[in-house]
Image 1 (cartoon, rainbow, N blue to C red):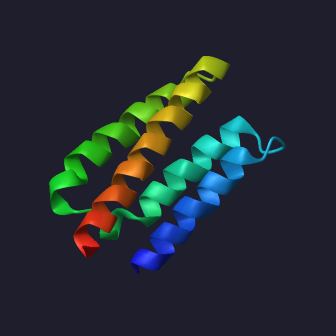
Image 2 (cartoon, rainbow, N blue to C red):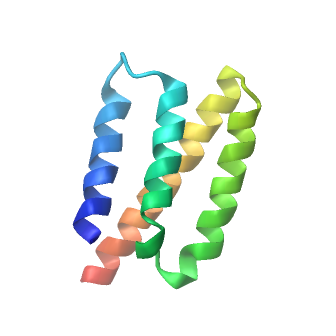
Length: 91
């Protein structure tokens, strides 16, 4: 199960480097990746992840370039935190 989360994280990271990929789609993709990873989020991180998702959705709802950038930044950081927590859990 952790492999699918990591695959999603790497897929998201690779999409971030693609200049043809629309920024709004990246925000949506990151939010979906987080939603797909919910079962693998450590219990002590659940509240923090939920707060981050709500903040990202608020940024996304602004429908501005700045809001989209903030959404991407917020979700990318959350995905990184999830990945690090899963990596720490494996060690």
